Length: 317
Ligand code: ADP
Image (cartoon, rainbow, N blue to C red; front, side, top):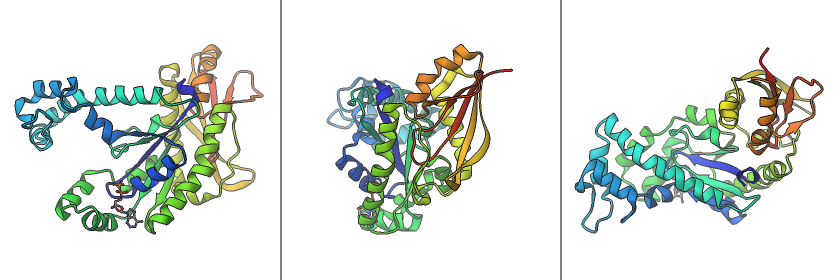
């Protein structure tokens, strides 16, 4: 039934304020999938995942109780690219399978909140209906991590440096929540996103209904030039092998919102049968079919109330 839910990716740098945003969404009914928790569970004591780690890296990665000794694993796995890849080749499929299992168990019409600290680094953004980014300037995060979470300053600095840059975050963010105010300010901004964007988005996807964008601009990503590329990647994730090409072909603007860009995209397919086969995956992914006046083109709009889109699915000439 995965066509009946929407998946929201929540991310941000360490200490940015993801927990506060997640709490607000969960309090209002989000179905929470916690990536950090899953990453721990799949290699917990007694799991096949942990047995695979032992086989790959040796008994030294176990602690006295037979659980995973994380520093010991890190010492072995983070020494070379090959060893890091070996670690990922064990954990990533297990994490992916468990995430899918939990997503499949979500009730119909759920708003699935996938809380993923390394969403940008893992290039996972295209696989969500919407990516919510929590942003706090680096110096403020550093101070909060040290003063409020008791982290060692050098450790915090290193972790921040190892993560994605603000520019990389901008490129994939559909919603940019700034956490330079108080926690209450952030919770209020998150609630507005929930009520004005996520809930109507979910309702529109469930009803296969396209909308004209109706939000004001404040909650949106300020770098709208990245929007086209973002949607190309998202469309690829939805149409996969069913298309020959996906391109951002133009950007127009909404009649009632002259400042709001509406990206136009073209999905090239073999023939109209292939175009029709994409109707449902596109609708489930947030691009419901709308009426087309060209019989050789299938047209899709956007179910996201925060941004319009026009997607033409057409056979290659
Ligand atoms: P993340 O989950 O993104 O790593 P957290 O939500 O845990 O970050 O926030 C990091 C720390 O900063 C926590 O101790 C949190 O309570 C605190 N914090 C978050 N937002 C604010 C804020 N606006 N003002 C002050 N402290 C904050």
